[in-house]
Length: 428
Image 1 (cartoon, rainbow, N blue to C red):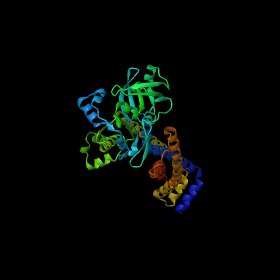
Image 2 (cartoon, rainbow, N blue to C red):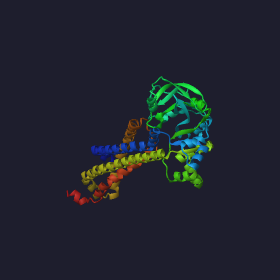
Image 3 (spheres, rainbow, N blue to C red):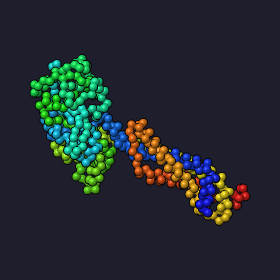
Image 4 (tube, one colour):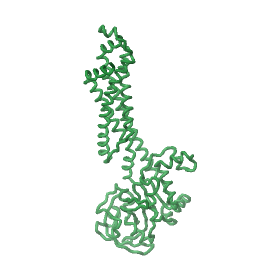
């Protein structure tokens, strides 16, 4: 009997039930899109922010200690500086969070003279191909980390030992153009080298008054073969919380459980700690302005997604409430007759909830797949990449459908419970 009545209602109330299904589908589609983007937005936002520079700086441990003890500036520190072995840099991609290391680039700065004018010369990797002892191969370098630079000329290659990138300010001072030749002399080693202007770049910073060359060229001029001065690292990180801040102050103060949680989470402090574990001769400093900005932007973005999800569910619940209430009022004679024949409030409520829930689940299924499409549109439009569907969204969709159906049906169920068969059947 219950099944026959249920099928009868589904057939007779097609238009109203279709509107309920459409309302649920719209709400669930928006919620599904927002939740998928929210769960995937961490990596997307971090990838976007990586375009604005490194968030970790690796320096020799000796130089870091001298700087901290005596508060020396960079020039004074360089006099007592130690160096990092270039061969050790592959270890950066061998830590627990190796795949979170997006890019890194070493630097070696030395002074040269160009036309008797002192100039800072910086050697680096532009786009270096590395083979890691684990068997992985990576491409890394400065150009990917400085993507906001405006560069004129062909892309600089690491095997280009005759080319030089010239900062815009320096190029204007010396009236340099692409293809011009520069004779560089090292005051320290008296070595000379003639290079061709391969690029003129604009960074908006102090780099505009510097020269950038392939790392072997700077090492040769400075007589520092196989050595680098510092390394900038760009890593995908998890926003800092109280645990991460506690660990950053003193990792030994953590309990065993806290330690495992911290070490196995991509906090910037845990990544720095792991780098120092594999490279004991270095000090890894977090650039907190970048790290904290990433965390703040990520949290605000995720909060926005969550608010949009909640608002879409509230709107769906309100729309369902109106539709179900209108449906109950329209069927008041039928409900009154059922009560007159002995049906209880619970049995009538179960009939109404079952039919609404069936339609809501059908609408939720359609809304889920539409939401996946919306998520891809958002991913391609905003981040230029694919948003990976999260399996955890499926049970969340079921919970959302059940919740908005129940909440939206409550006003109608209240009206149904106070319907008296005598009033309804007599037209009152």
